[in-house]
Image (cartoon, rainbow, N blue to C red; front, side):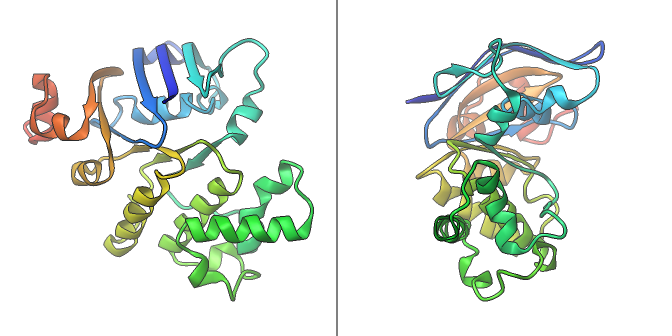
Length: 251
């Protein structure tokens, strides 16, 4: 079933057009990897899926993004409400400073009106279990989130995103600051997550895209050059530019 439908999406930073006429569809419980050289529009595209792009001064968006049957750019739609319903994990782990491990996960639930301690306890534990972190932190939940290792911090940020049970999680190069062991744990986690959520991941790592994703989108100069099943994109790309990028002959 289609979860996200992007139609004629365009985005600008001032007069610079970062995205041009993007159209694609993402199904429930898929992992979609976005690949392409630096500055090609991947991160901008991801930030358009939760209305973060417009937070940049001078930035604007045109077109439609349908999420779970609703156009998030329709008049009257609250962007803050949109962001609450879409999980986001950034390149560098960003646990909230001054907050415990527990409170880092609970913060979104509290903002959503959950205040009963037993409910918070249950949902925090569930999120940490799903983020493959519960076994490592269950005895130290009162410690600061920033006291964890880099890989643990990133899984804490994933738990924080999962706690509010969003239908989709956006990941912008979530392993680029991590060591190989932590990267492998995040990749395993992505595979487990797709049983419950849809994941859109920006990555510069071609092998990572091939390992974790069901579909791959290749962006170049703000345009979507090719989009399809990952195996097809990596073994039988339809566009010459895609083949050149994947084989390292690009540029």
